[in-house]
Length: 278
Image 1 (tube, helix red, strand yellow):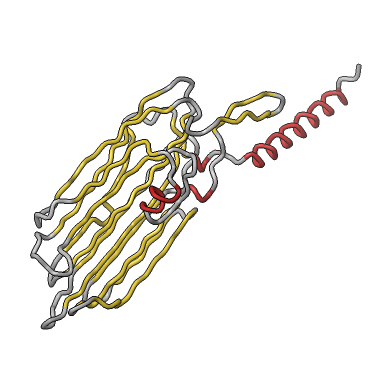
Image 2 (cartoon, rainbow, N blue to C red; image 1 turned 30 degrees about the vertical axis):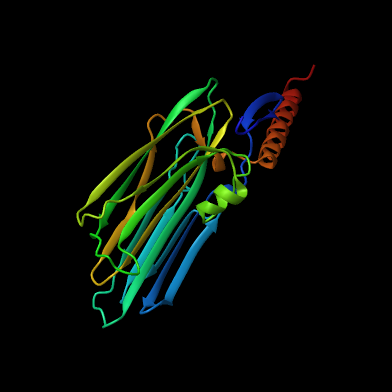
């Protein structure tokens, strides 16, 4: 199984719940950078934001020449029964005016991860839909890199999964079980484009699945655009039975709830006995 189940006692009743998920298994982060390039590239600014356990992140380099921005979000304002999905975006713009023998490289990356637990009673198959949309300038053969926007979407099992900013760290160092995954580019046509995708998987009762995704945009060249900002979105075809793993209380919360219910029950029993003596 991808994640074991746990049984807790609440007011004398035993209830089976999915295994708890640590805060480091979800998060959102972004990083942006710009470099001035002649015969080689030299850093000309960078920014980063977010990390593991963070609900959202945003960073930008707004001043010309060469601009970049990235946004990532996993909504923490939900309640059990309402499924929250990440939203990602990254955008890089080339310099508006170029100097002789000089160019600017712009880079933006948005990353998010979130977990989902299947609470149904029988095995079920799921389909995760996603859509990458935006616009990328046609390639111009720039020595330091043409405009590009790409996305990676992976589903992992719970064992060894931790939030990381780099997919390579997850795949080659942490090495959680890979359920499904794909990487897609946005066509560099100079026109608005949409690239849909879908990952299919099956969960047993109590199993967890973790979604990791990133969008990367980069460009070099005067007037070029690699725009994939706020445009990688997700949805399940039929999310019935899925719950955000981070919304399930930890065991100590269940302990407090159990104690509270027990005290309430004893209080009511004592009150009833006071007015109904034997």
